[in-house]
Picture (tube, rainbow, N blue to C red):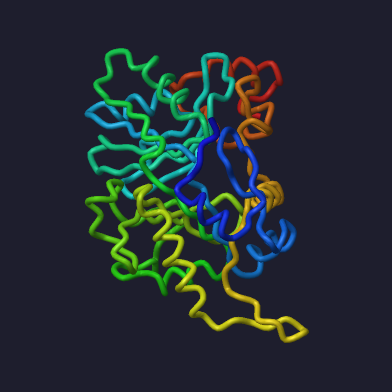
Length: 310
C-alpha cells in the first residue's frame, strides 16, 4: 500500500502532479512546472515536503562509540548542536546509506541520524548488528516527525516572519537550534505555537533550512510558513504579474537542484553495490580515522589504485 505524508491533502489542494516515489505518494511538481520551480529556488525560495525522509535515534552511554565505529565521519569533533554529512558502509565498503548525523547531547549520549526514504530499518539493523558490547539504544523513528525544507535566498527572510521565539541570526551551516524532542523544545518556536528543530542544511545547493516537527504539526507548519511568505512584498514580472516570495516545489526540482550542486542520491549515485570511491565521494571518508566499518576494504582499494584515499 502506498504511503502518504502528513501533507498529502495539501498537495492535492495545490493540484500537484503526484507519483509513487519509493512507496510514497509525492508531488513531482505543481502548476508552475519543474523548470520554474527550479529557478524559483535559485532566485527566491521554494518549500518542499520531505516528510518521507527517515529518522534513526541512537542514545545511551555508548551511543558515541557505536556511531564512531559505524560512520565514516570522525564524530569526535562533532560538538553538541552540530551536525555533518557522513556515510554508513558495510564490511566491503559498499554504501548502506548516506545521512546527516546530529549531536544532540554534550555527553555524547544522544544522536539523530537523518537517513534516506525507506532506509531507516536497514540502518537501524546495521547499527544493531555492530552493537557488540556497546550499551546503546537504536530506535527507528520513521513516521514520528514531519520535515519541511525552505531553500533559496529568501528563506531566512521568510523564517524571520515565522519565528515567535528564538533567532536564526548566527545559525551556521550544519548547526541547529532547538531540542530533538519537539514536545520539549523551548528554544525555537514558530507562530501558532509550533515547536521545531531548525537546521541550516539542505539538499539543493542553495542557502536554506530544514524544519523538523511532530508529524501532527506538519500541515499547520506548512500553512504558517506560506502565510508568512504571503505577507512579504511581491516582485513584478515584466508584464506586471505579481511574483510571490515562496513557491511549493516538487521532487523534480529537488532532483535537478541537487544534481546541479553535485549532491548524490541514494539509489542513483550511491547504492549497496558501490563504494564511496566508485561514486567519486572519497573526500567524505576520513581514512585518517583509525577504525570504522569498511575502512580496511577502502584502504586496500586505495592501495591498489596507488594512492590512499583517492
